[in-house]
Image (cartoon, rainbow over the protein chains, first blue to last red):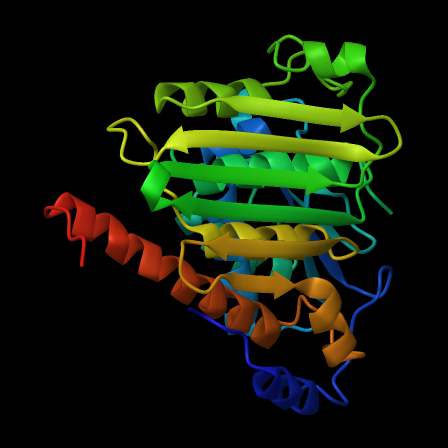
Length: 127
Length: 192
């Protein structure tokens, strides 16, 4: 059955040498996908996967991607909160892979929130 | 929940929210007993007997944002629909162990789903937590121990895209052989 090869890990370790590892507080943008029971049932894992793919494709190294629990607005799931440093955090609702593509490009990369997918702006922050 | 991988994601999120630093996730199939088991054991803060007894009630939760908690009741429902059970052991300060069983061949047994994606999601969302993942389908088990990976990787984080991809592929391969077994059963049992 499947085994994870130590040589593969060594290769990755070599290839990431010298690249910057972001520590908390060093990022420009933080993307949080809400991964409570409600979010998971509504498709939050797919949404996180779409953000992960977009992030990998962009090659951006100043963005961190994480998850949190239920935001208390279960009927609006899947949701994500995007925090750009020194800007109001934006909560996006009823996300799907297509919306994620656009939000990633316009908000995360270019810094322009996508108002039509947002529920609210500036309600809370984690930093 | 559409499949078992989403239940696993949900219950493990509970474990990490309970302050666990290590979560052991085991998926085990015993063909001779027609049994599929999911065991999630954490070293989080645990529950007192009163809370543990009430937690299967959907109107019980530790959360403050709303007053209902659906995670364990939904998993129990999925287990019972497939002729299985849900057992819960918990000790304050020691952790919690959730053990769900399913009759493997039961027509209402939900599919495993994308287990690899669940693990990658958990690693990404809980970078400070260690996971011991075991998929044991009767052959040699697939094991991912993030403590070993971290020791090997040094400064490189587990959440580096290349590391996540490697973990994803390893689990997907391990679970793929299970999907093949599922098909074999569908197409008439092959005892050879």
